[in-house]
Image (tube, rainbow, N blue to C red; front, side):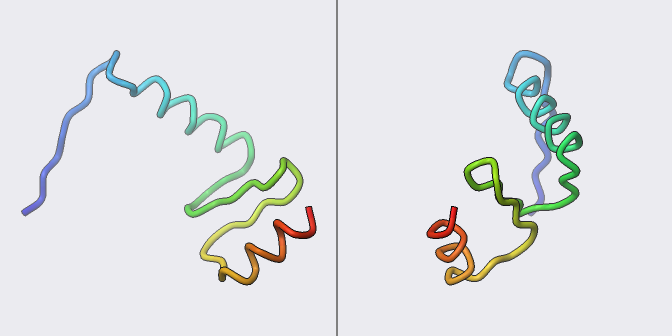
Length: 58
């Protein structure tokens, strides 16, 4: 069964819209999208080993 909830202003939609605008400014077009220490960005599915490597090197 599919359920759709209609949202109204004041229930957190402002935060979602702000997040969408910030993502557009960064050029983010999909999820998952990781920004690590404001230095490295990774788009799409990453292996655990790749994430560990990035954390260790930033």
